[in-house]
Image 1 (tube, one colour):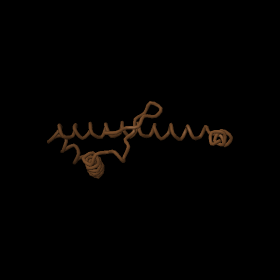
Image 2 (image 1 turned 90 degrees about the vertical axis):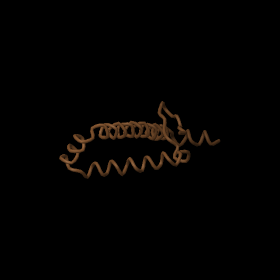
Image 3 (image 1 turned 90 degrees about the horizontal axis):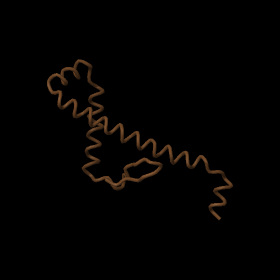
Image 4 (image 1 turned 30 degrees about the vertical axis):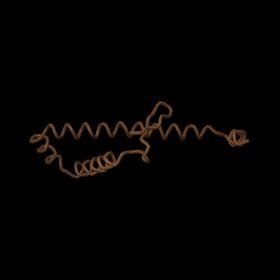
Length: 95
């Protein structure tokens, strides 16, 4: 998977994400929505009957959360870099 590095962060370039990764991300998003719609009792029953599957999902959600955190740091660094630019500095750079 292609990544861009900025300010110590890596972020996925959506133009270069292979199709299977896009499908997997969409499926993971749907799974998260389904999990959030279940009652605590339903989730407890699932954890009791298939704990390995639940831990696999938790791990997948954790990885996605970490990737989202990295991406947020990337966008924040880009915004911070722009916020330090003054109109005079931009004009000087353009000349």
